[in-house]
Amino acid sequence: MGQQRQHLPFVRQLIDKTEFICNKNENNQRSKKYFLMLIHVPAQELYNQSAFPSIFLHGWDLYFFDTCTPGSAFHLQKMLQIVSSPKKQFKDPFKDILCDLNVIFDDCLWDFCSRTQMFHPQLPREMFSDGNAYEFYQKQTSVTKRVECFEKILRRLTQLQEQIVNIYYEQLSKKKNSSQQSPYNKIYQMSKDILCGKRFTGLVDSLQLQIRISFTNFVSNILKYLANDYGLETLSKLSTSQNNIGSILNLIDYSSFALDDESNGKSPSPTQGIFQLVTHYACILQTPLYQLFHQRIKAHADDIKRELIHSQNKILGS
Image (tube, rainbow, N blue to C red; front, side, top):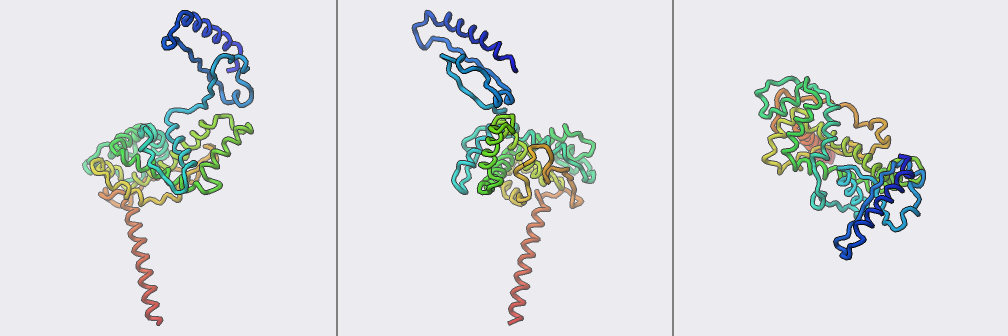
């Protein structure tokens, strides 16, 4: 940092000299040796001044790479697909992209468990068939242990992880046509801020931070619904039968979830507070997300009642 102008000429001279010695007697192009020099320049310096005079690079091929931290490439590629894809087109991200779901969900589990408060009654150990679920719901369990328990349950439910990631991008793609919240507008504004000197990180790093905050908060809100009513005990039993996971997740109303954080992590969005895990029943329900399922059934029943009352009133009125 700030010293490359003194160090790089010396390193360059060493490389040129070594390359000449290695290749001066080599007539076969395939056996020639080539050298690669990687130079890391802090974003603050890169966007405010020249990293090094370009004349120094005469005879060398120069490539510039914006930084990309591990795990962000998956989200970044999907973000660019959403921006460039035709209207209403959504492609399954797992058909073309290799990714480690456990790595992607790591931040989400830590975020969720660190914001969780338990209001469940203490049920006896024999009511739980999964020791990880029992340990998770104990009030004295540490955040680290709680994350470990959730990880063990989630790793048996790969399809659940895939469904959650798909839902996130489906919801994000719905905002594509919104001028204020579309991914295109986000990328454009970040690029503009970088060129104007308002941001001191690269485009990829800025996007990575934005997506990380958005994705983590979105998944944490889903995990809250899954963990309520001792849901992890029932969820752990789905590891051998995962066909209905998509239908279960459809019970959640995602419209209230924040997909964008305009504060860039400086202050929490409305859905980034404390998660209070409660139980609505005095037992461990065998139906995942039963509370939401009951609400959905009740809403449909109320709609049917209103239609019947309206039709009866219409008949009596005539």
